[in-house]
Length: 129
Image 1 (tube, rainbow, N blue to C red):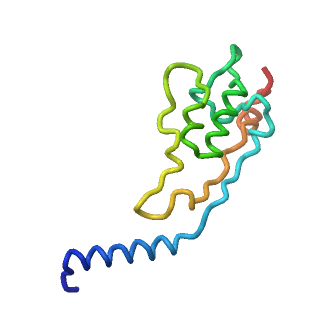
Image 2: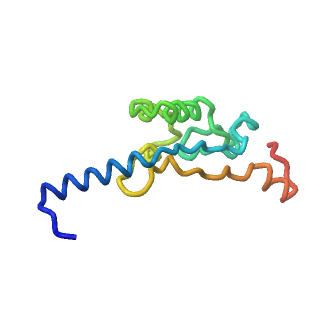
């Protein structure tokens, strides 16, 4: 293939990227393992960096502030997540980012994590405090 002049190459590169973006139409539906609904204390749900009580359970207001931010995707809501200390969350919006290489990260489906009860039952433990 002959070498393209810079302006022609830019135009061709743009057409290729647009065609690739139009071909990437799948948005995955992520499945959960049911732990969030099963345990009102949010055991087994991500709560690192959030406020926790003396027993170690996440404080529900703190957890809900994180859920609100994840649902809206609004930067202001991420700033309002109630943390449990002075260390901020590291890049909590990373999952909302776009990439210019490969498929859109949200187009890939992941299997649900094993339920929390699975490990406890295997070890013969109860999930009660």
